[in-house]
Length: 101
Image (cartoon, rainbow, N blue to C red; front, side):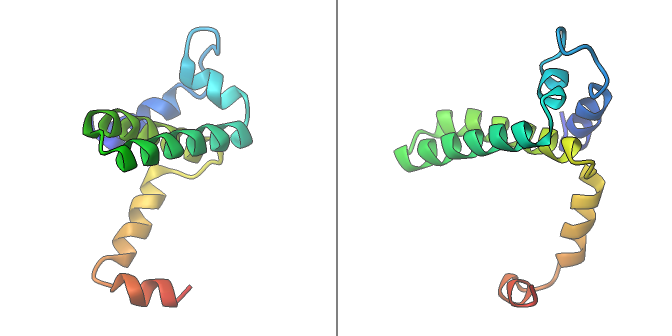
């Protein structure tokens, strides 16, 4: 599954029954809860990276990507918008881009 496909799947579950869809359940709790869950998953990924557990890191990285897309959906930010921002930055030094903010 690509990230585009996952983003589309998450968007399609926005109006699903929270009793039958984990994604719908997360989204029904609001953007703040979705952001909190994303943060929890990011911390878990960091812990696995520090431990050097590549299997655990792989699993947590998948959770991070999923919860990032859920958080974006909860706030009405499309994955395409994020990808457009990355495209805008392409070819620009990370140091120069950071200095421009």
